[in-house]
Image (cartoon, rainbow, N blue to C red):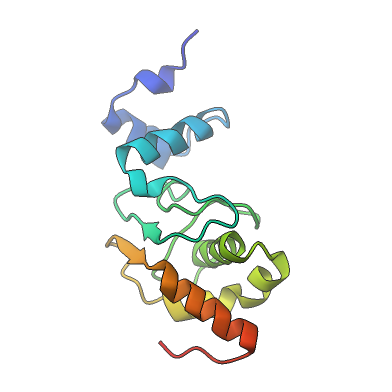
Length: 147
């Protein structure tokens, strides 16, 4: 039997996604769907150092950025406030860039504060890779980052 979700309209998909009525089998399909719909949302692989895109127009926080949840207890990513979703985004972004779990866990709160808390959660955002890499280099040297 074909996957019913694949035949749904965008409006119905958003309903299912926003109301968390998905099975775990739908998650890979939705990652591909959003990546095709908006190519910058293709999830980065571990070690890939490309710009980070945050898309406010996607209500399901599992698919609203190009950062995949490799670490942490949540797979939701958010920004614009000092909550758990922003911490999870910072944690996984740092892990994706550094491939170092200890570094990511140690510096996720600082990255969240320096970059993610002040972003308007109602607007799309681009965090350029060179800013992230500079921040990581400064932390590896033990220098405090000033935005």
